[in-house]
Image (cartoon, rainbow, N blue to C red):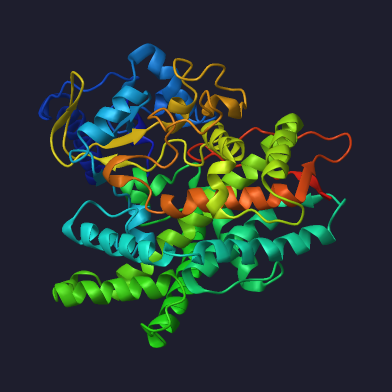
Length: 503
């Protein structure tokens, strides 16, 4: 059959013979030449194409993996072309990998697209667990701790929400695209956190950055063929070019801001995360001069990019989903309003130091993250050595993905998992219950989210301020479409909503 296909191709006999030999060689290697491992079971996989013929591209991969769990168990193996991938879909197995054997699975599976975007993996999120990565992460965490000491985060949340609330009050009673306003709110917050600046809603640079995030989310949300089929890297698709061009816009923005901070840096006047990051790197160099060559300015630029881009995406998408869910469940929105009114006097604004007095509001946020995980399959890990999962053998270099969506929708851990019910996250005393491995929006272990320390308090305060001041509802005669968009991502669809001020 293969010979008949080759005869139809306009190639020389020599080229056809080489292609036929390559195909036969690959089939032989995949069948007989590879070391045999007792891998987790999975759908049919064929040489060259892997499991692609077993996949339904109209159904998101996280849902397919959840369905395959019923047939093959909580750990399954699929092949995306030549790439071996193990997907984990229950809390016990994920705990074994991330916590009990965290060192074995601390690698980051590195793709061609991420290599391009990160200037050769000079960031934290997509870098492998190398000595340079460990030192860079330590510097970043030190910078974050220094920045978050005191009231700086709270001040930035107040600044960004105040600007957006003025805009929302001007549009009160009119149908608006809430995603644009939440995008401004979060973009300003991260712009303030990272660089002590802010945008206006019609600012050309803000609109350009928002377009970059929306485009990369929607395009990346279905994966890139260049990561699976290496020959395409020489002749990239239009989609790949769009993503690379748009990300260049964002990275140039970060570089320009960082360069300005470096030129004007003063230890006596550190205003934002970029300043504290520069300071943390200089302190690390004083302790170990080799760090100056190991952690370059480009590494610091990409660390700022990590905090800015990951913070914007996680926060704005989560807040958008939460508002849409509250509109679809007005009785829950009313309960949040009642809790806020009980805690605060008229004219009093929410603050971070009363976070523990707003457990229902936080439960609403956590339930939104459970039901609508921004990255349903998380970020791909890689095994750093031959290791195991239960009875199965996992070779070094294997991609491993945690199916957060499956964890969050497992009926063994969540009764009626498809229902939005914040009370499930409260204990018998009405306080927020301890976090379990079944609720994992920020991952866990050695590769847990760097920005979790910022994201959770900022989202809680942001949501409390918005709901303290506004009621959100649908225009008359319309409903909210809660169907997610994306195959590898979980994005809300654009919806027109009405904002009304609360007296």
